[in-house]
Image (cartoon, rainbow, N blue to C red):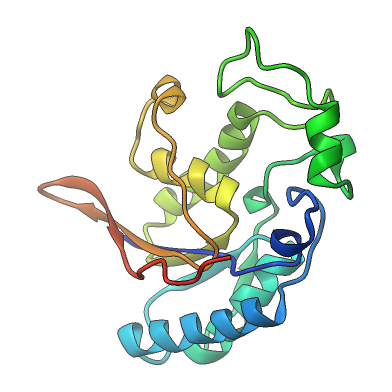
Length: 203
C-alpha cells in the first residue's frame, strides 16, 4: 500500500492574518498555480489513471487543491469530512490576533489536550477523528492520494506509522503548503515516509 499526502497550497488565511482551522478559506491565485504544478508532477510520476484512489477534505482550500489532481490523473475525488482541519470553535472567522488574546493559558495542559478556546478541538480529538479514516484506508488496502491540511496530516502520519498516541506528545509532523510525501508499507522495513517535493514555496 502506498499513500501520497498533499498538503493544500497557499490559502487566503496564510496572507491575511486570519485563523485557518474551520474557516473555509479559498486558495490564493498563487495557491491555485501551485496546485496545478502538483497535478502535473503527479501525472509525470504516476501516469494517466494510476492505480490510486483520490481522497480530500471537503473544505474549499483542499477541494481546490484536489481538483487539478483529479483532472490530470482522471480520478474521481472522494470527499472525507474526517480530514478537515482542526476545529477552532469560536475562533472561526476571527483573526490570529483575536485568537492570541482569547486563548487559554497553556499551563497544566499537555500538547495533545490543550484547548485554546472552550469550544475548540484538541489535537487528541483531531487524531481520533483522523483515525477513523486511517482504519478505512488500511481495511481497503488500496493506494491512495490524500489531500488535506497541515493539522490533519500531522495527525495522519503518526497514525499511519502506528506511533502510540502518547508518543505524539514528543513527535509531531509538520509540512508546508503544497508539500508532498509518500508513505509506504514495506514488508521488510515496516512503514516509511519519503519526501516527494522540496519545500520551495515560501509564504
